[in-house]
Amino acid sequence: MWQNIAKSFQTELNDLGNALSFAPAWAIWATLLVGIFVVACLVHAGVLAFLHRLFRGRRPYLNRVLDATKNPIRLALLLLALAIALPAAPLGPDGKFILFTAWRWALFA
Image (cartoon, rainbow, N blue to C red; front, side, top):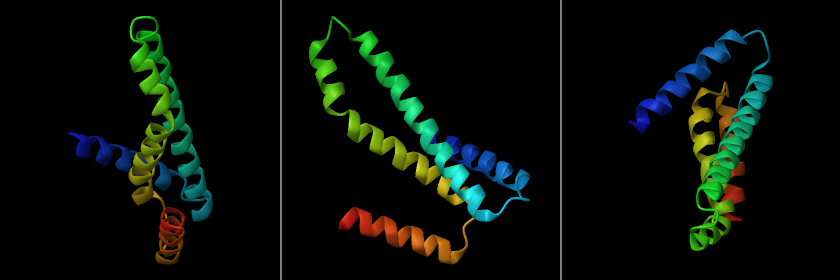
């Protein structure tokens, strides 16, 4: 099920990239990734606000757990969005190498 949703997003992003083929590849790539990050942050904020409202007075322990795990959940959503959007980004082999080298350096530095 999740693979189908990810494939659907990737095909939509590919179609969007094809529609914007007149723009330079770096502009499409940057716009795509920034847009995906914004959407992931908005989804995270909406879900977190909904859960806080749902557990407001009745479940103080769950509210504390949500507050404590807010940043790791945001990071996980951003990584998931990046994993979905990156295959659709029009990067050449050199751009992918630079991106993955920077990613590995950021994770293991």
